[in-house]
Amino acid sequence: MKPRLGLSLLRLFTVQGSWTYERMIGVGVGVAEEPLLRDLPGGPGGAAYRAAVARGARYFNAHPYLAGLAVGAAAKAEYEGVPPEQIERLRSALAGPLGSLGDLLVWAGWLPLTAALAIAAVALGAGWAAIAGFLILYNAGHFALRWWALRVGWANGTRVPVALHQPWLRRAAAFTGPAMALAMGFALPLAAGRLATPLPNSGRAAMAGCAAVALVLLWRRTAQLTGLRLGLAVLAGALVVGWVWR
Amino acid sequence: MSLDVQLVLLLWGTLVGLDLVSVPQIMIARPLVAGAGAGLILGDLPTGLRLGILFELFQLDVLPVGATRYPEYGPATVAAVSAGHLVNSVGGLALGAIVGLPVALVGGVSLHLLRRLNARAVSRAAARIEGGDPRALVRVHVGGIARDAVRGALVTTVGLALAWLARFVLVSTLSQHGFVALAAAAAGVALAAAFAGTQRLVGRGAGLRWFALGLGGGAILEWLR
Image 1: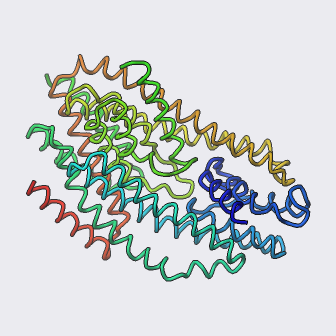
Image 2 (image 1 turned 90 degrees about the vertical axis):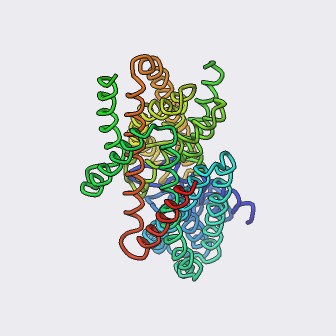
Image 3 (image 1 turned 135 degrees about the vertical axis):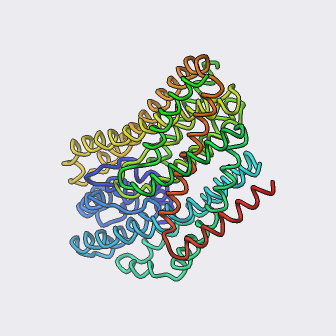
């Protein structure tokens, strides 16, 4: 089964490739689960296999790095002869926790933490080494999480919700939050310094003023105003100023 | 800039576009990596890193959870570096920002369109997928990835065209004051976006104290340099 797990893992790297608003990552999950289902009674093409493939591709949403946990667990449940309704319920029950755990651990933790370290390293002059270091460090966590999720799902089947209570997950969440906050705080002044370096003093003052006003606007109107929209509006204004001021 | 270099940039922008959502999410789509890669291709790593930092700060305002719509800063950074290289540092920052932000917006819109095209493809194959046909399933999935590659290439092409246009029009018409105003505005908003985005993540509890501690440490180190 190991080669099938490997193939499933490889396919999990593409899990969001056919993302839709209707099925979310369902089709990708079905594609990743398919290799694990080939040994079901009747083999590929058999009734059990086809029914399981169809179930695997239905609506599902979770963090992409943790989707393997649902893939492995659902596939194992198919071998254990768990009724289809129970497999559907398992998938539904896993979607929310896998989404929120992944968002907390990765999108709001590990990714901004490693990105902040990379920003700081670039600002301090590490150059290309900082980029390579970021890719290696981030993906060490990324690959490990994907493999852990698939392996744990496959090992536990319908008992997989217990795996989500493992102490290391709580410790990782408890570490990445504060570490991310510290690293981001550390990186921002260094990034400001790096961006301000080529500017004359008047430009640095303008940059600081612009940052202060933009921050107040973003804090006050978070729902309607994004950094991109504000950036476009301010750049349009600066372009007019630049044309007039010669 | 030779056609060869433009084609390599287009390939890089396409890979960066694919990495954001489809495959393999190893974070070459992050602006810092995309910018450094474009800088290496153009033989101008400093500009790539400077614009990489600028757009990485904008990216920190984005939390890509669930079905949220968000801008795409990867191919935008590639286009920005293409616009900003061979100009002086301030001009590079200004031109990069004026090209990159609209391209990020276009990238975000293109992602939404891609998802609708994917939905049509799934809908067409729904009966076969529900019948458990693995070939139909894989075909729909690979089709989605191929569409995303085309999308990434198109967004990068638009970005590179805009970069060429910006250099052609703005370099000769804007004064040095104009470039300073643009660069200062872009850097200021980018810092504010990163600050606000981080503050939303850390909240008001212990995380805020860690954030403040980091800010203090970073500010002291920057002052000492």
